[in-house]
Length: 295
Image (cartoon, rainbow, N blue to C red; front, side):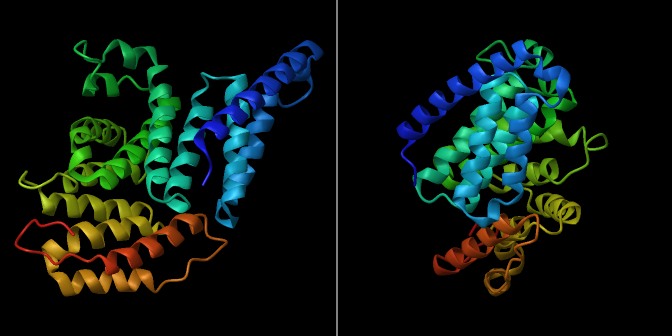
């Protein structure tokens, strides 16, 4: 895995070069003749991100291109959302151990920075420490919704890794998920419904959890994005045991572990990760002991 200090130094140096090119481009009138340097960097990043399942170098190349774009336009929501998405993908698809948690934290940092650029959102944060609330969430305009979605994914996956130690984040993440779910009619997608479910399922014992409601929401998320196996993995690990028993949970994990992702699938990287995580879950399977016990 990369050394974080070396990665940061390279990114800063690259950003300085790109900034200089951007200024030169402005002087030469590039913006009047075709795509801007930012748009070119985003196009390069998007092309590499679409091929992220090919290997970590390809995904790192996408991140580098997005960092180039950020150096030129640090406050462009679409740039920050792409960075958050790419770091989340690397955390799920390639990172191991502490690197996975760090990548999710980096994704959340870019996502939250993006959200804070919305003046309506920041003006309505709770004055006592700047806590997120529904009034603030309802101020987010469409350009900022992808940032909130990626921040939600990053936060919940980080809590999942941290366990009880990360549960303090769940209240804020639940608010973000609920806020996004209120916009479901304007921006259909799996993330908000999944987020509301996961914010419930990740609550540590002895806190009560509405497993029935969480199951309905997780099923709805799967219906919205049936090709993403990670949603089925969440159900197998967090719901099937408490609801249907250990045998059913093992069977669901075994079925996932036996699948073969298709390289031309848009979720190829994430689905390969789901298969790998299902295999790991089988090796560390903890039997359900009473209602509500999580695997």
